[in-house]
Figure 1 (cartoon, helix red, strand yellow):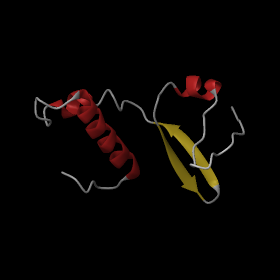
Figure 2 (cartoon, helix red, strand yellow; figure 1 turned 180 degrees about the vertical axis):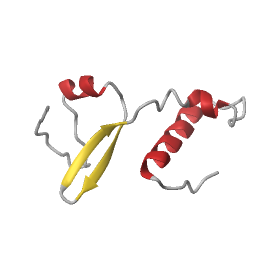
Figure 3 (cartoon, rainbow, N blue to C red; figure 1 turned 30 degrees about the vertical axis):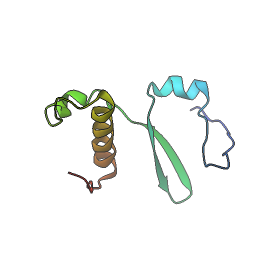
Length: 86
């Protein structure tokens, strides 16, 4: 188990220590809160999901738009919430 104490900035931001970032092997995380326990979990395959959604995005869509769509779907699937956009 790896633990670390970090400061929360005025903007509510934290920096994950390098050792933890390397262990997670991702550049995106999501938070789960249960009672007073906060869990930070890696978002897996967010960028790998692009090929699944590429067919649903018009050809002129930028890579950023495709990544944003894949991210939205990955977060929605993980949280169990439906998107307000279609």
